[in-house]
Amino acid sequence: MTHDGTAAGALLAEAAARLAAAGIAAPRREAAVLLAHVSGVPAGILLADRQRGIGARAAAAFRDLVARRATREPLQHLVGRWPFLDFELRVDRRALVPRQETELLAAWAIDEARARGARRVADVGTGSGCLAIALARGVPGVRVVAVDASAAALSLARENVREHGLAGRVALVRGCLVEALGPGAVDLIVANLPYVAEDEHATLEPEVRDHDPREALVAADGGFATIARLVDRAAAALAPRGALLLEFDPRQAERLRALCARRAWQDVVLRDDFSGRPRCARAVRPAEPVGAGEGDAG
Ligand SMILES: C[S@@+](CC[C@H](N)C(=O)[O-])C[C@H]1O[C@@H](n2cnc3c(N)ncnc32)[C@H](O)[C@@H]1O
Image (cartoon, rainbow, N blue to C red; front, side, top):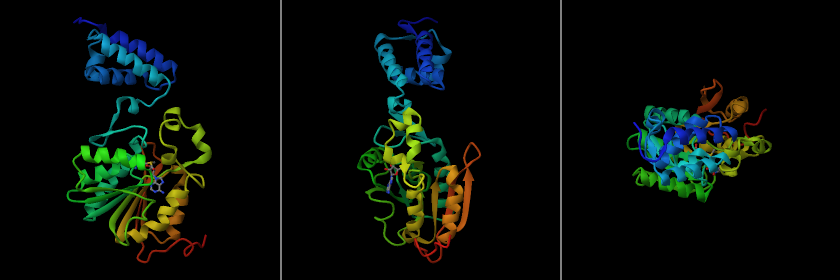
């Protein structure tokens, strides 16, 4: 069936060629996502009904977005929203775009919180608020403290928390790691903190390097410093038998295991990501927290 306006198929073909030339790995899919965004027609329908007419205004807006995407502005920032588990979040330059790997951590944290009957949990380095919102949605009645050092990230997290109607159960706190939490304040801590080495930042894809906040990505000591500080300090903020769940770079797995052993964390379990490499860890609070320095035998 033919319609008024420019045919969707022609717009998509032109855009896909431009995106491919710019080095975008999935140019057809991304073109369809952008056309769906400006036209309000689902991507699947645009791909199936290539003769569907797209009005002049939507076609112009689409070409603008394609031009921006060709400069490697992230697709997620151009559409302004992105799915995480079974919900959507606003995303922009204020915080890291939530990653698929982090959905594994979120699902694990929800399972742990339910199994432990957790009443109070903390999301340390909340960014967009994705993990805090996932926990509040997935664990009935749980209260979440979402901490971040970045005021900009917290302002985005606040918008997302409000949009999900969770302002009464998710408190947003500016601070460093667990410093704002009292002793034994929470039953579970989940954290996806920066873990990219400083000298690797320049090698990241432009979408990440130039658009995600640097402080959301990079940590000292080969990317391990912030995670290590949390492993040192988290036990004090956990109730007895409370658990810490972390995401990390697969190359940090053995360092993390060794550090957890030195600090006497118990029941340490690592899980793989979609590529079969260790990406998340769960550790249970030591009976007597061992601070930095005290357990440094190795
Ligand atoms: C990798 S991003 C993760 C954001 C979000 N949790 C997610 O999974 O998409 C790390 C976040 O930790 C925050 N951050 C970095 N260092 C921190 C610290 N010392 N204390 C609290 N937050 C920190 C950053 O501002 C950033 O928002």
